[in-house]
Image 1: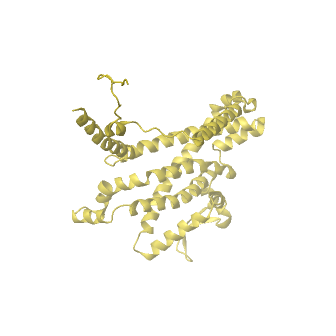
Image 2: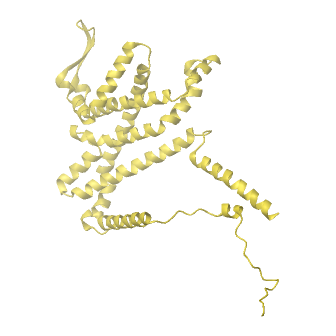
Image 3: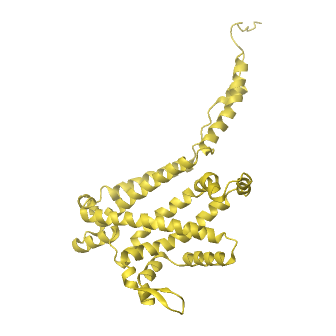
Length: 321
């Protein structure tokens, strides 16, 4: 009876991978039916958008290009930018004052600030614009003097409240209430011991806020405040109801004459998109500017990944030795 012998140079068994080699393998996400379904839906939606915007002749892109840089449209765009900048500046000042009154220890100031914020939350911005514009019907004369007493100075309301001033006042009053709550949230986000530490170091309150507390407050409130500023920029389109000639009013005047409604509205959309994108990039720059010294999620993720990979690489070196 013959027996089979195995040569010495042939291995009878193959050794599996070591635990260190298994740990070093990259983790790939499992491709399930959900990924294929969502990918198909995204491709289908993209094809619909291409068909709607590229291969639809009703957009009249030649008309959009002809009016995009016209003098009339650029004038309306300039009025929109000026209105946004003035409203933002006035609203921020009003917001700082209101936030100070909201956190004041005096009950009278807290009450007035709370009533003002609650009233603005309950009032739509369009209603506020109309109320300010027609304020002359309620108060025909703006007078300065002693209540129920003599008047030292008086001027007709119609000479003070024009279309432009009504737009600035109405939007500033509305923006000031929401910016006040954003400022208050930034102050409340600070640790309570920092102001006491500044007082212990002998720093006056103004210098403490300027050098230590204000940079931290700005870092906290930047995303919310930038969102409100962009909202103010879009709310400038509401001033068309009072006849102020900004971007949307200019576009409406043009398509009322040539009946090119969709192309002219697209002109306004393009400029709104451009200016909103600029504001978004400015927000990102400001966040990086005031975020020095604070950890970011991406940095933490890299450190966490490095901490995981280090033991496995050390084990691999030990196994190699």
